[in-house]
Length: 114
Length: 110
Image (cartoon, each protein chain N blue to C red):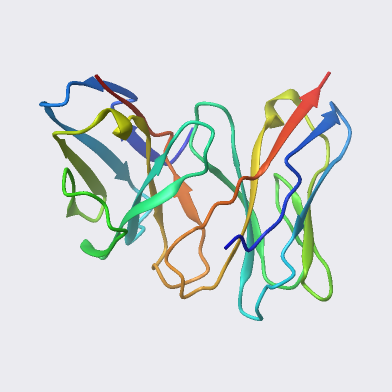
């Protein structure tokens, strides 16, 4: 069991759809992250939120829109995605972004774009 | 640029200790060594981290050489459920990101 919960576990959507991925943590962490993982590749960072403010955007296309409504929740809004965006999307949380505390990951949302 | 070098794959016998090496010859004085693993269809799982001293927790032990240029993750009694990709990552406290390399695919065999 992980302490970071992601929903849904699987999502299939068309290129014109709008959907959202959700992430929740109750460990009191003030940093939350979105990573993208393509098949047989390591995870790659997309966004970092620190104290509910977006602090890092790793040059992610605007069709991905993150949101942090409060310290426990992180959303990733999806619109007009492309087939190459099919991947496992991982949420993580951790201590302050600048510190040695480890990040803890959810089990991800497996996204398929038709 | 990869900061760590790990073997691509390794096999271990169930019930035996699994020793996973990682080379980080360019590590700087304030970089920590982190180990994660990713079991198929799950997210990465934090295992252990350390700076200089050897560390042990309920999952594994981390042995860091005195010059800090390499480390070994030890799973004391490997089980079939330890089959996973194991990632060795070095990170300075000021760095917000975890930079995953290719990792080592560990297969535990009965």
